[in-house]
Length: 268
Image (cartoon, rainbow, N blue to C red; front, side):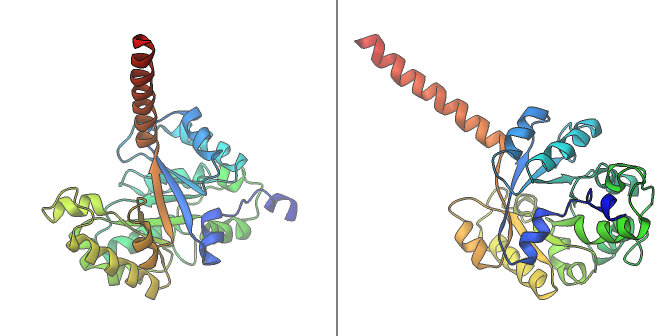
């Protein structure tokens, strides 16, 4: 059985967070195997692929899960918020973890844990015959213990209701990361896109303080001009970029360089 357990890869995210280290993450909107592999091989700790807003299909995510392990990179899937099967499918495909958007109450957080954690934390539907259980090759107790301690459950706080209920949400056992989402919150507050507005900063600080006090790891998005403040507030799981920004900026720079250089050449 010890031989079988070698297939149970430990989470980079949790290993670093439990050692009080920062963890970085890239968000990927492009539903493409090569784009994912390029991100994974960059040296990033984790990648966040999205089924809430993009067309990523399950077969692609299954392949991405294998690729991520080749580069010691964790795969997080932001799920479609729905039934219990939406929660567990990425886990059964052996993604490192899931991100649940728009969590608004402690009761909702409890239901998430019930659906995503095995006994004694929850009552997750149990198969074991998929990639995360290495096709029934893993002992039941080892499989359940591994899933409860090495699979990452992230809840997003991105609505006023979630900010108001943050104490209840952070008190729920079985959640690893409380992820503050400023974009949707700014819209709800009537200041769309102003993610550095004092009201957003106040909410962000409240979420981090509550998460840390309750033994959870706070996470959020960041930019070079924000990162010092974000880290000072206690945030440890940091989304530092996205493929769409990188592609757009690279293409724009290439066109700019071409325009300048070709224009200079034409005048010679």
